[in-house]
Every structure is written in structure tokens, then in C-alpha cells.
Image (cartoon, rainbow, N blue to C red; front, side, top):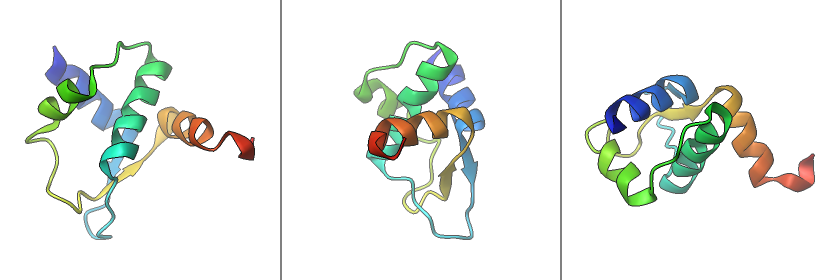
Length: 84
């Protein structure tokens, strides 16, 4: 079940931009995941379980991932509340 949830998260909340050399680091990626869980109503995995499940799903850094969708907006607003 973890595989399906993580695949859905990557599909709905990230976009691949391999040519840019951009990296979505570990803290923002897990934060985006928890925001995606909040938006979709999914129960988030503990961080250790999340990273175990992400092995083999991401390229080594730079991973070429960018945030997208409602989870990205939720993450940004939660990370920078003074800008609201």
C-alpha cells in the first residue's frame, strides 16, 4: 500500500525537470508529502518509512523535482505564514 501512496504523491505533487539541475531537498520533499497528505486526507507515513519507500523512486541529487498543485500551495503557505 505504501508503494501506491508514494507513487500517487509523486504524480500529483511533483513535476520532473531533469534539465534544470534543480533539487527538491529532503526537508522540503517530506514537507510537501505531509502537505499532500493533509490536502488529500491520506495518513502520512513516519519520515523513516517515507524515505525507505522513496528509495528507487528518486534519482540521486539533483533529482530534478519541482513542487506542483494544491500540496505545493499548502506547503508554501505553511512554511511562510507571514506572507499570507
